[in-house]
Length: 96
Image 1: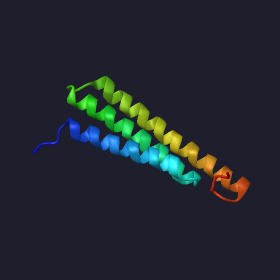
Image 2: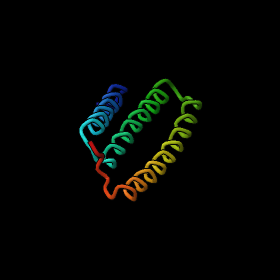
Image 3: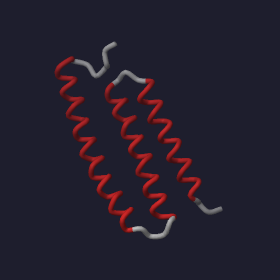
Image 4: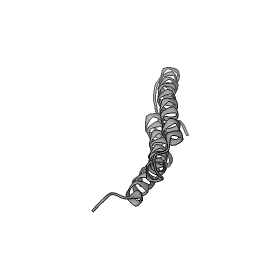
């Protein structure tokens, strides 16, 4: 049994669903942020899948590299926002 494009799309859909569930179901700022990272990971899996299965596509590989760098920057900025929120309010729980 070989791994086809359907397996990767299913994995991406599962990660996307878990990200949405995490964002909607939590009031903890760190968990919401991890949900956003799951959504972004699902999009990267789709980029890699369609770049790989449509033949070698250097433009897709460059796009994936740039998006990965932007996601790392986003993770750093989100950590700073979470840290400042904790310093200001003394908790990472979002208020009602």
